[in-house]
Length: 64
Image (tube, rainbow, N blue to C red; front, side, top):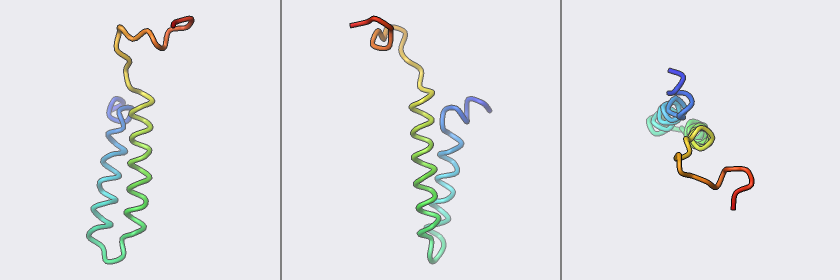
């Protein structure tokens, strides 16, 4: 469950639910905007917790 939150999957599910609710309702612009915010949070979480490849030397101190 912890991996699901760290990978951003939980945020993507919430964003999808908000966007679908916005599409279903008559005036769903608020739901769509909230869904977009959750999607941005999901992208940020996914980028923050992305694993670096083992051969990546760009993040090593004193490299380049």
